[in-house]
Amino acid sequence: MVSGVIAGAAAVLVGVGLLPTSAGAQRAPLDSGTQRTSAAAQALPGGKANFVVSVGSFKANTTTNWMRLGYYVFHPSNGTVTGKWWRWNQTNKRDVRVDTPVLASGCGATKCYAQTMKRFLTGATETVYGKYALNGSALTVAWPSGSGYVQEKWTVGRIQKSNGSTDGSLVQLVWNGVGRGYTATSGYAFGSNASLNTNASAATLMQPANRIKYAYRFNGIVAGKLTGGPSAYDLRTFRQCADGRCLGSASKSNPGNGCKAFPPGDTAQSATVNYYLAHFGGDRRDATEHWFRCLAWDGKTHTQSCYQKNSHVKPSLQVIDDSGRFRGWVGAETSFMTTKANQSTGPAINDMLGIFKVGPRVLS
Image 1: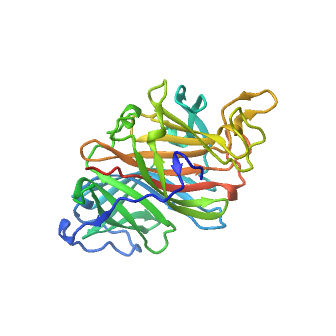
Image 2: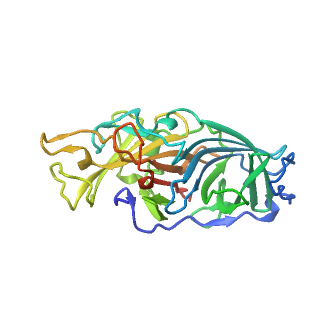
Image 3: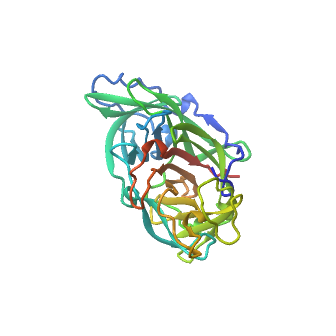
């Protein structure tokens, strides 16, 4: 991981308190998953209906890893949940990098269109109807699979303000494992009662309250090896681009062995990293991407172009609280290995895949 905007130093994560049992009526747990049964009325998790969620399955030395990013909407009257998401894996759900319609210009990064995954340019590609049960702070979400269900287990956690009091405008779901037969290994989720259409523009992200250094936590797989841990994401280094939907930044880091030539000011020990953030859809979606500038530098003609192969691409969904305030993101890294532009032909063992959360921003 490069330093600068996404720092390698450990970041202090926001304290999360467990939701007290009294916050939700005691309910019977869901069935074990062997039979399809009807759902019963349930309380909302932490009193919130709309969640942004990233879930993944990562196992070392395999090419069966997968991620999905999307929305959970809970319906308390009948204990059901609607999931809408984008899904990627290393076999039949690979995807290719494409340009968003947002050009980064005049904001520090090389003048290029920010890229994301082709599938993420449109609305959620899958809709699934499940059910849930809430028992105190223990949340079980069950999704249909064959004639039964697979189960995700979460703990509903309250967010704390800087003074230690409870922030009632947002809740966090903390991953607590899965039921039998489900391969998911990790997840991140935040929820509120704000409409899923409520979002923050790039200009809003540059407001002083939002332009801060965020805690960042991730886990995934790189070239067959598991990776993860705390880091940071620093919006203070970004500037708004000429196209107001885009933010850009540039910082220096060691490029390793990836570059054969270097633009003026860069060396084999210290090279420029371009960072892009495009609010391209007018909804919760953001496209984030970064790559070393030297990867697209032509040492013979001394010209700079836009990198079209193995950039780090991270589809992201904004976290918005009850009051419509921006608080962070959940997302997925979908950097499928390719040897040619507009392809993802592998080898799959060299893919860089993961899920992450950024924030939440702490209220005072």
